[in-house]
Image 1 (cartoon, rainbow, N blue to C red):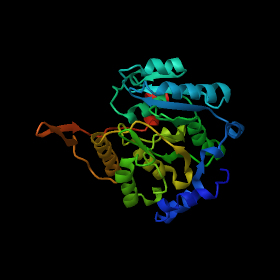
Image 2: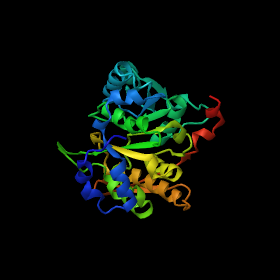
Image 3: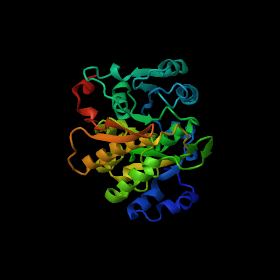
Length: 330
C-alpha cells in the first residue's frame, strides 16, 4: 500500500485511542484514503478481473445514476471494471429497467442457483451474486447512495490490486443523518454505534479499528468470499467481517476512507429489526444456541393505545457458496 497521509491517524485519534492495541496498530498500517488510489495506479497493478455488484430493492431513485457513473468512468473510460451487475431482491418499482438502461447487467435473485428457493434479505442477493459474476475481485456498493462517486470503487480496489497479501477491504466514511428538513453532518450509523461497535469491543476487540463495520461498501477476493457463509439478512456485513478475521487474520484486512456516505435513513423500527439480526449473527459466531423462530415485538401508537406488531426476525444463513455443487460446476 502507498504511504498513508500522516494526518489520518491524528484526525481519528479520538475514536481509536482507547481501542485494543492490535486494532490501533492495524488502523495505523491498514487505513488509507480514496485519493491514494487513482485509476492509473490500479491499472498498472491489475492482473485479474473485477466485478462490481449493486444489491437493489426498490432503488429506482438512485440506482441509475450510480450505474451510469460506473459504466462511463470505470468500464468504458478506464477499463478497470469488467462486470457491472445489479442484483435485484424483488423490486416492485422501475429499479430493474432503470439499471439496465443505464448500462448494468440486471440479475434477479431467482435467476441464479435456480434449484434453491430465494429468501428475503440483502445477504441472500450478495451470496447469489457470486454465481452471477466471474470477477477475481468483487466490489459491493449499495444502490441507495445519493452522493455516489467512482472513488467508492477505486478506493476499495486500490489496496487489493496493489497488495497481494490483502483479502478484504472495507469502506469508512462520515454518515450524515436526515432529521426533518435538516441534514446533520453526523449521526447516521446508529446501529453501528449502539449494537455493532459494543459487540466488537466485548468479543472481537481486534476489529474495533474498523470505523464502519456495518458499511455496505467493501471488496474482497472471490476465493475468500467463496469460503464464507452469508447471513441472509442485515447481519451479513457483521458476519463477513468477523468470519474474514477468523479465516485470514487482521493483516489480510484493510479499510479506505471514502469521505462521506449519504443515503436514505431508516426509522427506529427498521433499525431495531436490523439490530436483532446482527445480534443473532454475533451469538452464532460465539457458539451460542439460538431459539427457533425469533419474534421481535414492536409497539405502534394506535389511537389512544398501542398496537403490538410481531415480526419473525429469524436470521437464516447460506453456507459457503464454494461448497455447492451447482456453483462449482457452473
